Image (cartoon, rainbow, N blue to C red; front, side, top):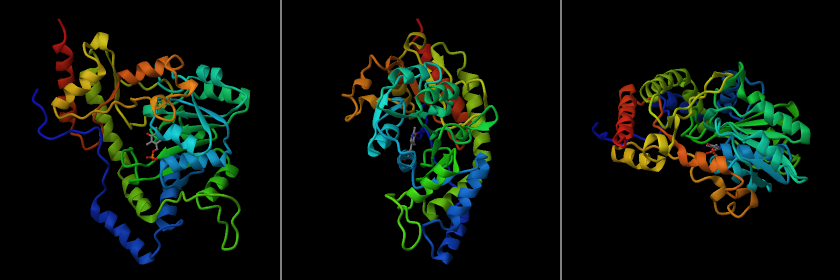
Length: 379
Ligand SMILES: *Cc1c(COP(=O)(O)O)cnc(C)c1O
């Protein structure tokens, strides 16, 4: 197979037709209203709640700020048990909230936080759990709920990869106390930068909505210490246009995933993403494969480099683990002895190019190149 003549990246942001975005901007211009719960904001909030079938959904300026606001709304304190196999935002939002992240190991199949590891990490200082639906694979809700109930801990879910994910017919956001969604440009649904929180109770939702606007409750009343977590009208207008593209984008991604599956499924040492039982609607955020050096004949890092030579730019999500970051690596819970599964998984995962605009022939060519590379190492 020949290399691609132009670089193929792991994703490309969904871009709506510029003229329809411009038409929306014209309305914004006419209104002279650029932020603070404007028309676009309220419309997107309503449409997203409908799209995701969630009763309570509040927009924020980005996913990281959403996590920080969630921590404050739930008054999280002390040690918060979380996964090292995630994006930097997950533990860093805890640190910025005055909490102390404590890493626990993940499940080898789902790559999400292991309830047994969480339970083993509970101490008298534990104040909550922050779990991640990594690569759109739902966490073990039942297992985590049981631990949370046993110790009276709140659960926050980082659903940055879980937009539209449904389990047993329910939207993923119905679980836990709060779920965060990120609308960063690299995410399936996006507003360039943006995020949202869905809360399990009206009281928590009210707190979220106060906190995101400095706890200002009227011209002469500020009821607490909030922050600026507001989504502006330009972001929201973009989101409304992107949301209208969602069904088509999902259909395209399903075709691409099917092409990858068809051509990659029988390669020894290559494990394809598998939706666990119960997933009734997949999230389609990433297509993450796992490379086991023994079976495949080359390591994940070697495959990553080899694909680069073909102009294919995959990503080693989530390597390095958050537990190796400056600021975290000296914590007792960061030791590799505490996180054997996460350390192994972080050496194996590779996310392949996955976005609606990627032509199916290109996905097929990428798969053929991976086949060739696998075969090239056979004796
Ligand atoms: C993208 C992402 C976030 C939030 O990121 P923002 O860029 O602040 O919206 C949080 N957690 C995970 C796992 C993510 O991938």
